[in-house]
Length: 314
Ligand code: HSE
Image (cartoon, rainbow, N blue to C red; front, side):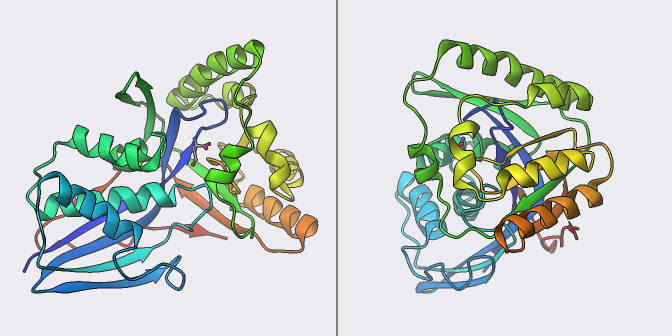
């Protein structure tokens, strides 16, 4: 029986002031293979989360696939998943969005696409709770997304080709739910107003590769100030990145990863962030230099196999 093969990129949500609205796809990928079998459910999981992720119907990717099956009242005889994860779990790099999108797209392709792209997007966003990782994970590139009443709206925005530096400190159990619980339910009007202007300027800066504009605009007042303290070494790593030449730096999603934007000196910036985390916490951070992904979720048809994406490490 045919095997469905797809890859889903990591995503960096918020991009500073674009809280719950802006997200960027970056070149780190989970790949999923899904086949129908005669009976039962089997999962092979490799890479990130392989030892900790359940291999039964409580697995998030299986639940995501079944949420699509439920929409069309389909009951598969049996399923086999082979999952290769490069996106670390609970990192601020959109691993849960990649899992939801991966499970849902694979299931939809398996059934010859009964759900339209927009419906699939809405289903995934509903499961995730906020759209800013899901939309770029599906579409690639830079995406702005929001709800108007119950209606999800999103647009892909232009972004120049660029590489970002990502530093992930070794912090266990850093979860978006807790990081969201740290946020106030009300914010001062002047903070909201500052973020509106800056978020638009972040999008403009990324569309033109204007790193000087990004340096000013990528300063959030709605979530980052409340989250920094939960990340030991954040201040030191951010300062080290700027000292090494980074133009702008911010928390990736709800963290603990940091993402730095720079036209040059990527390696030095990555090393400086790594050293700063090591000095501040005694633990090594994982550093990547990653291109912006412009393809989003890719379905490999026929004989084509999931590509091994090039990933610069340090
Ligand atoms: N916008 C979300 C948050 C992203 O900051 O909580 C989580 O990845």
